[in-house]
Length: 310
Ligand SMILES: Cc1cc2nc3c(=O)[nH]c(=O)nc-3n(C[C@H](O)[C@H](O)[C@H](O)COP(=O)(O)O)c2cc1C
Image (spheres, rainbow, N blue to C red):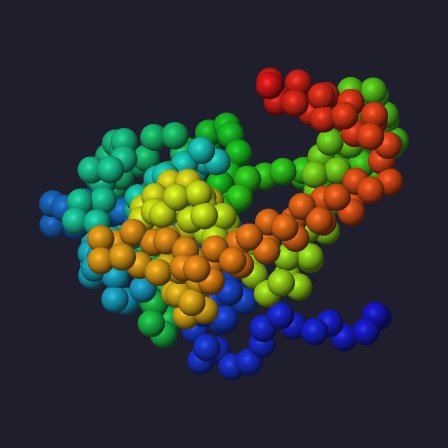
């Protein structure tokens, strides 16, 4: 065993944001769960979904007791679970916040119990409610799956308050490629390895500056143009709650300001922090490229630009 790691944050869960950030280290997919109750449709983004049992076929998820749709979900007796596909971040954002008529925002058709089945998903499970269990400030809903459908595609991922996409799967790493190298595969794997290596190095560098990747993304975006929360949602991979949390923290630190119109912008201090971040990033990149001859670098830049179609 190596020495003890120093945690980035620790303590009692009473510090809500830090506790949520620790929980957010567990990566999940994203689902939209829907139901129909007394003639009205409900749907919300949820990442608390989990498989429970194969025989009988049970799944679970949990809903905040304060959610406006909680009474509908705990009373309707049935719900549908839609597993989102990698291109569906906008669906998750749209159904991840309160909305008068959430289903008006998406394409869907009705399942056996009338519950919404969304277009473009990776999997759908139609359930009857097996039990509703008390779970603190959440209700845990256990569903019995009656029907399912699976579609081809890749899942939308969710971790650390941000959406993500499947990159390199663990079984296609370079060790496997080393066993069966082909020129083409080697090149693709080099590209991926270089990107991963650089971003891992940069992540640890950025952590030393005391900024999370999410906070950095927000600073970068607002440095370009002031924007609303909705604009940030559209232009970054950050989920709604994490945008709220991060903006609150950046405001506490005096780095961002909110105008009466709801538009967020950087303060003088925020602009200065962003400028030093940028300078740091440039110095960091220069250090990484220090030992590479200028000719090689120029050739690599041409190849990469050509691969990006530029
Ligand atoms: C990625 C993601 C995952 C979420 N997971 C859950 C969840 O598991 N349970 C929950 O109650 N809310 C979850 N939410 C928040 C709800 O979607 C949100 O509170 C709901 O849409 C608000 O609806 P309401 O009007 O019923 O309160 C999640 C939101 C996002 C963006």
